[in-house]
Every structure is written in C-alpha cells, then in structure tokens.
Image 1 (cartoon, rainbow, N blue to C red):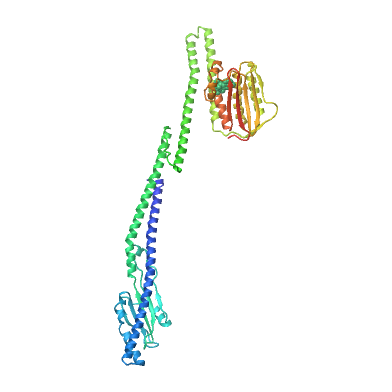
Image 2 (cartoon, rainbow, N blue to C red):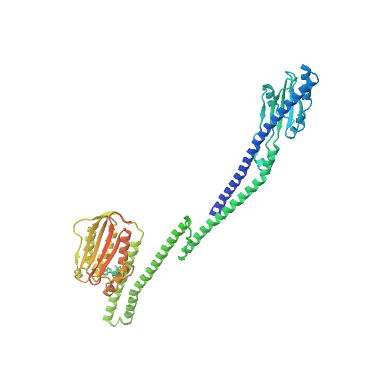
Length: 498
Ligand code: ADP
C-alpha cells in the first residue's frame, strides 16, 4: 500500500480518530468519576473532623464530671482532667473512630512550651507541623486537601486520592493549648475508582474496535467506488464504450456516476458518428478511385492504338480526379468547421455579407442565368464570426443555384425580430421530397432528386452549414415543395454566439 494512496490516508485518519475517541472515553470517564470521589472524600474528612472534635469535647466534659465527683476543685481538678485527656486516647478514638481515620493530640502544657504529641491513634502519625502551628497560634481550624493525583497512574494502575488532614484547635482545662489532628485516607473512594477502571477500559476497547470497524467499512465502500471508477475508465480507455457505472441512490456518488455515464454516452455517440463518417467517406472516395483504375486499364490495353478511346479515358480520369479533389476539399472544410477553434465576436452587417455571397454565386453560375435578389442597401448589425456565417450562407446559396434549373430565381432576405436576425435563402429549384427533409443536414445525405441531377455534391455542405450555425447559437430549418423550390431559414442571435 502506497503511503500517499487514498487507502493509506483514510487508514491514518481513521486510526487517529479511533485513538482520539478511545482517549476521550477513557480520560473523560476517569476524570468524571475521580472528581465525584474527590468531593466525597473531602465531605467525609470534614464529617470525621467534626465527629472527632465532638468526641474530644465529650471526653473533656466527662473528665471534669469525674474530677468533681472525686471532690477535686480548681487547679487540682484541671490537672486531673488534663492528665486524663492527654494520658491515653479517649475511648471513642481508640474504638469506633479509629476505623475511619487516624488521630493525634498535640498539646502546649504552659505558654511558651514547645508543642508535644500527647497520643496518636491510627497509621498516619506524621502530619504537617506548619499547619498545626498555625492552628495553635490562631485557634482556627486548618484543613489540608490533597491536589489531583497522577492521571496516568489512576487511569491504568491505582487510584490515589491522598491523605486529608484537619487540624482542630481544642480547649482542655489545665493545658495552655491543644490541637487534634484528624487524618483521613479515602480508601473507599479509591476502591470505587479502581473498580471503575476495568469497565472503563472495556468501554474504551469497544470504542477502539468499533471505530476501526466503521473506518474499515467506510474505506472499503470508498475504495469500491474508486475501483469501479477506475475499472470503467480503463474499459473506456481501451474502447469498451458499452460499460456504465451503477447509478442507484440519490447522493453525490450517484450524481458523479450519472455525469460519467453521460460522458460515456456522448463518447459512444461521437464514436458511432465518427465510424459512420469514415465508412461514408471511404465509400465516396472508393467510387472515383474505381473509375480511375478502370480507365487506366482501358488505356493500358487499347490506349496506344485507339486515339478516340484514349481521349475519352483521359477525360474520364480527369473528371474523376477532380471529383476526388472536391470531395477532399469538402471533407477538409467539414473537419475544419468542427475544430474547437474560438469563434470571433465582431460586429458586422449581415446584409453586406449576404450581398457578397450572392455576388460570388452569380459569377460562379453565370451560365445558368438565374435571377438574384438580395437584401437592399440598408444595414443590419449583429455580433458573431462574420467569416463563418459567410461560409454557411455560401453553402446555402450555392445549393440554391445548383439545384435550380437555368433561369430560375435565387433570393436572400434578412429581417430583424426582437433580439434575433432571420435570414431566408430561397430558390425556385427542384425542391426536396418531404421524406428527405429530416435527413438533409446529415453528413453524406443526398436526396434522390439531386442524385439524378448529376450536380456532383457529396452531401457534406448542409452538415457544415448546420454545425457553424449551431455553434453560433442559431438554428436552421428547411421547407420545400418538389418542383417549386426550397427555402432555408437561418435564425441568429443578435448579441453573441457560443
Ligand atoms: P451536396 O453537396 O450534395 O449539395 P448538401 O449537404 O449541401 O450536399 O445537401 C444535401 C442534400 O440536400 C443535397 O444533396 C440535396 O439533395 C438537398 N438540397 C440541399 N439544398 C437544396 C436545394 N436548395 N434544393 C434542392 N435540394 C437541396
């Protein structure tokens, strides 16, 4: 697989997409659960600190009651209470509370003394001395809440929410100052977080596999489209124009398939037209060639003795070769007219063009003594390629002269109709049978009437004229009556052709 191929790029993008999805599922789930657990831990630590403070206060009260009961008063009573509270952890700490956290009592016996630890219960013996000192100094509770632990460790190995510590200042008779350290390790919340890890990783794995499967499916679908396209293009390239892309569905891909199918349709049509054109042209060329070869054989056999026969054969060869030359010239005109050359856009007077065309025809067909009528002196402007239009009109006028018996009438009229110019080329000639009318613009088409006229055309002129007029953005139509004459109507846009 090439690195720059579509398949490789899609694979890279899908893998990145899958990893991003998995990453966000895993990290997102962990962060959400960890946040919940962290605030639960803070709440529990606060609750525990409150309970511990109340337990100590209760212990001090019962120590005072016991001193009173023993008949002690004043400093004696205070010293007894102090000794009782600082000597051993009161019962609630040693029993129930100890399961939840660890506790330590630090006392300052007399003002100016250094704080000392009276007792501690649980595993977290060492707590922060600075915060404790602050609690002793200010008499205000100090809380330590650990920051976020390593995301990676928590995500993959072990959840750690850290120790929460509260330094609670307490008043104990007979003692200058005291602070109760309450430390809480949120093992329960850590356990919940750890329990979340397995399902979270399974979810992430499912997301990874799912997104890879979706990406693979999408890649296969896209690749099958591209392979289809390539297969079709390769087939068209080797000339198999019967192949078409599947068009089902209503999406961008089926739109593309329809466009390409239309392109192949038009290629196929062009191919067929081209093939028919070559066949017709070869057929037309074959006739004079066969004639020439026949006369050459006659010349070889009898040309030396029979002078009259030789003259006749040379004349016929001359005629046939002229015919071939004319056919070649018509074919060249047709090919040139269909070349993709830009049509010029100049402003010209169509009346002047028509008069020029008529004058040329009149000199060519002098012997036929036709009567010619053209547009008057007025001017009629339009935009387009004057030379091309002159060529097309020249063909129509030439046909009118050719297919009209001597002394007939050939006329060209022009008029304007809104944004169009209408030109009519009319004659009083042999006419075209109705059955031939739909075909006269086809290449090599000649009506039977004109074949019998022996006028020598090849049926290419009207195809050339129609092509020029089509490309100029116009239309051409014909109406005719056998024996009475024919009229070609050309409509051109005044402003611009394609
Ligand atoms: P050609 O070289 O044979 O004249 P065209 O393509 O110009 O070829 O014309 C095609 C056929 O249309 C002609 O062979 C003829 O049968 C018919 N045609 C064209 N113009 C006229 C016309 N003015 N009068 C009668 N028939 C015409």
